[in-house]
Length: 439
Image (cartoon, rainbow, N blue to C red; front, side, top):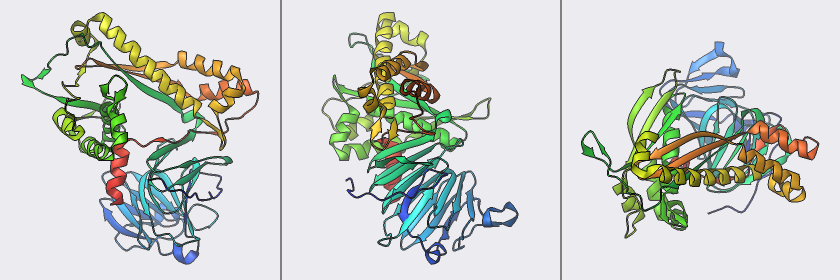
């Protein structure tokens, strides 16, 4: 499933880039708009005074900027069967110089299917924080409002480099993701799950006098699209973290059986939206849910894993059911898992292509002490209680805190301008999106 060859990254001082072949002027002039949905515009030369409504077949030239409004999208034809899909609220700039990005994602998200690149040619995709290289693959790039970038890879291998830091790069293999951001915009966030001991009764939950059996999650975003995406990711985390046995989770089983992984990912991606709400600050909150019966069928186990509703409860609702002792035990277990996940994230920070914070810590005991101190001092962002006895704790450490502490031990600037971590496993929602796009 993992491609074995890597591509040399092109250096560029501004951005998170992907490298893919195609470098001649003639090839670049072949880029055109293939399909549009909703409100899509092209700013000729990046000039707002020269804005055109995008239509199918419209050719794109250097410095043109394609923009998509809310609930709008565009498919860009790169030639020879290569396509880029621009999602809502996105901006894509066309480049020309073969030493610089061919495509620059200024904001939003794109999905790319680049499988027919001429041998010896290259295409590059840039964002505000790194450089990446691709040689025929299916992948996604997303850029947050603060420039933070995520690169998700379905197939092939991508070389992603931090902007302006040619020695800091990593290879992202199939089914992996990497994130790059400035330290000011970096937060290490991890969630742990724990449960009240088995001897505590698990209740049947009723809502509006109707028994329900679902797993729910809520997400908040600047708009409905990002809020739903956040909710689906949380739902996926919740489903895959569910325990099958003491030392095994649903995620462990799915990793062993791709068929189960595909079924669960599809169920999560297609989860029903049960509530939409605009908050006082203008952000949007979305709630999603999936039936436990469908999840159990997808798992195909003799003993059902999801045996009761997993619905949010307040602290005051949870405690009388599971007792104070049960609640405290679940909270402690969840925090331990969250802190362990935080530790893995911080240890995986790249100093350069060959060295992580964990490698540096093996050479300097002070680093280990500093990292452990930061974990102990992590901020608890939220504690969530559920009807099946589960408790989730989310903890956070600020990126600048990590940078300051590690640099203080090293007595010099070793972490650079941007955060880049080791590639991690692709979440099921992103996987399913790319899988469907790549078909």
